[in-house]
Amino acid sequence: MQQMNGVGSNIKALESGRRRLRWPFDAVLRFLGLVFTLVAAVVVGADNESKIISVTLIKSLPPIHFYASAKWQYLSAFKYFVVSNCIACAYAAVSLVYSVATKGYKDNPMKWMLLMTFDLIMVGLLFSADGAAAAIGVIGRAGNSHMQWIKVCGFFEGYCHHFTAALVISIAGSVMFLCLVVLSALNLYKK
Image (cartoon, rainbow, N blue to C red):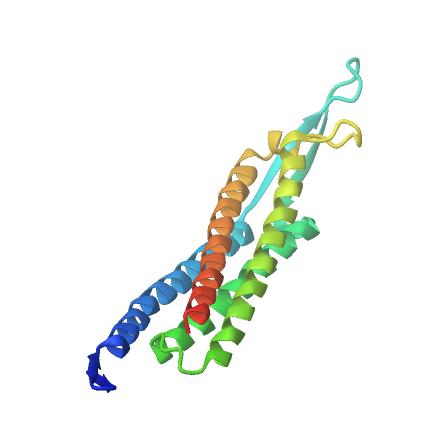
């Protein structure tokens, strides 16, 4: 109990209790961000599908058969998606270790401001990668009649389903990093 002008106060005890309660949320969000981005990167990185596809150019001719495969390496947006999720996963691992080592005590606001800045960079990186990959995914699923792009997901259904699941998981990882930014901003604001 602190004495101020003869009056006892437990304010410091309450503040340190609040600080301790924020730490597990920070660590849990970092862990979930790590897991979601890792799973998204692995699912897309391991996803490929190959088929023999038949195409009829003219009705009077027999169909042409050719071997085709779908891999994430074929599109730059999917490369960006995988690399961004790998970067965010590595950052989440490093920041989780830092968060656990310091147990959430924010004695140096500048260090936590730097951590919040990197969290914000991860939010931007992940949401931009998710948006780019989703745009290509929509074209793959629906095609584009104006550009004469065919529906790829009609041929490679398994590939498209796996990618859609990875995209949803990556968006969940992006939301975890966004929650970290909000949590850090609230913690810095209350100081």
